[in-house]
Image 1: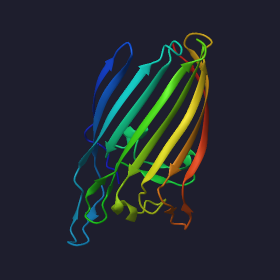
Image 2: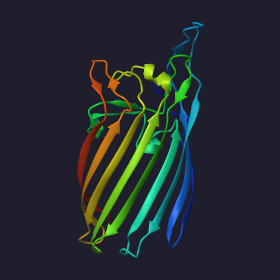
Image 3: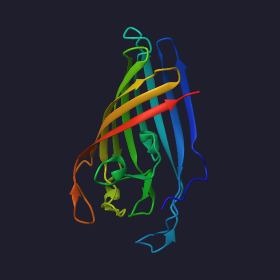
Image 4: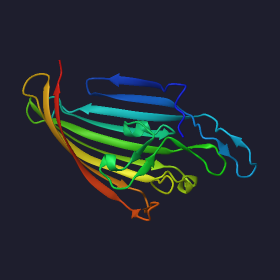
Length: 230
């Protein structure tokens, strides 16, 4: 079980902004602790796994496109993480991917797990790439088109675990493609709508304890947004 953190994440970045656009390099270090008491099947001795540290590295860039329309821009971001997977998704881990994302199967999405063979903390790793384009159709109406791809891997030992939802922690890919449109009738007020397609691929069918197996799955998401800035 996750034992929380005694050391906060350490985050740093270097950023440059020019007339053409901008770029940023960033990194983070994340502490991983467990309160599981592991009994070694060979020696019979029990112990707590040592604390480990994960990390994440990210590079982002954006380019202004005034030749299309004032305010237009394109951006791209690439991230690699080991033991700090929340920096790939922009959320918090550990979590379970499943009904919360509109997809039927549940897949573990955790920073690390206890190796069932030696009791060590083994870290999950992954990478992601995302990009998008913002275009102003008029000074009051703008549209964003965006997409992302994420790949998560846990290793062979994770396949033997049982988390209550599925057999072990499965490697998986996820990709998203979406667009939104905003109308700004007055300064500081945004009215918008967004639609997004999500696909989750466990890279091989996953067998659940109830005997049901799942393969690739997809879902549509939509949202309305009203925002007032003062």
